[in-house]
Amino acid sequence: MPKLWSETVDAHRREVRNAILDAAARLIADRGVLAVTMSHVAELTGIGRATLYKYYPDVESILVAWHGRHIAHHIEELTALRDRVGEPEARLEAVLSAYALICFHRARHGGDIAALVHRDEHVAAAQRQLLGLFGELLAEAAEGGLIRDDLAPDELANYCFHALTAAGALRSEAAVNRLVSVTLAGLRACGEPAGGPGRASQ
Image 1 (cartoon, rainbow, N blue to C red):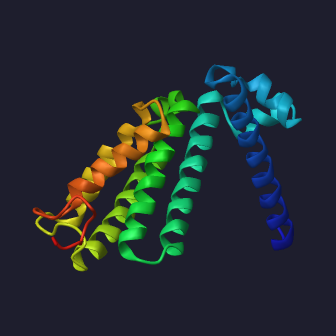
Image 2: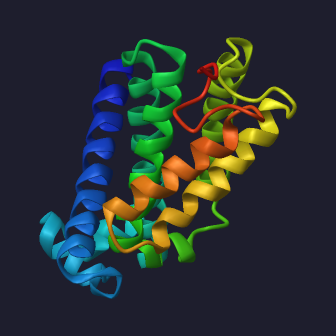
């Protein structure tokens, strides 16, 4: 197959896959997970069911693919936020706060999907990326004396991950902000004032 033709075919397939996942996302947002059926996705996408089955064999495979794309997008957002914010302390707080809000909103839009695909390889890979991102930020903050250094960055990363994932069970963004504050407080070195990490007692 000529290269140009191959690239054109690949691009078309990517477009169709994205259109299918976009249709699934609309159904999830408008009607919930149970509204995602092969018939509804085909109708919204504007393709025949036979064509749809060539790309995805069933609804679960569509949900898994959508969830994987969704998670990858969040990782990109958090990475971009890390690169955009200047100081180590501000970067750490911004990324942790953003992750907590992601968990909060995810529980309201597609939480059932997370339960369905929680063992999927995309989820496991994204979790490793997330822990790596947290670990880098925590190591940087510890090196600057901004947080406690009696625990390894990977241990603190796990602490942040599990603590902030609990945001999915909260009822308001105000409660999410309080959870972030408590999590950040746990990162401070022993004996530091409540005003913030790295601030000496007056």
